[in-house]
Amino acid sequence: MTLYILNGPNLNRLGKREPEIYGHTTLAEVEAWSRDAAGDHPVEFRQTNAEYQLIDWVHEAIDAKAAGLIINPAGLTFTSVPVMDALKMFSAPKIELHISNIHAREAVYHRSLVSPVVTAVIAGLGPNGYRVAVRALLDLIG
Image 1 (cartoon, one colour):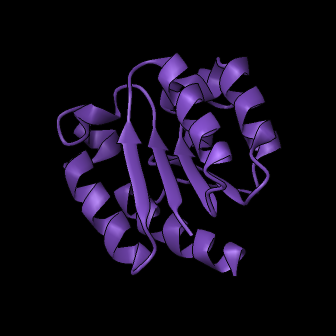
Image 2: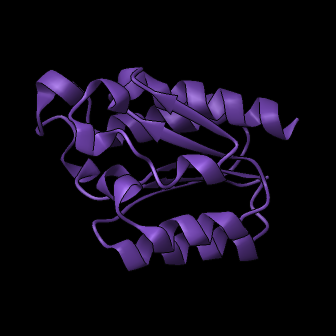
């Protein structure tokens, strides 16, 4: 019943990067919240600035038969066909997550390549969206 929570580029800068958009919560705090929300379910929580690494981790989740996946692809959401293709191969429930409301931001953030291939999308709840996403994923898994 392992849950994968994968984070893309620049999310390692949470708490420092554009706090007016992303807040002051760090990725370490987000990880702790996510693990708490998951309860007894094991969590693989990871962040990378490399597109290939994010793809490799989706492949790993597939091979490990992960129970579900939450992904915040960050900027790769709007540019990465390879991330989208990898997610297509993951057959368990998967949630696309964004800290900000991508639809209320600049036009470049309005077209997600990931949204059409995931089970659900959560955006705009701030860092707390991770807790919500974990609970939603557990509900989807049943």
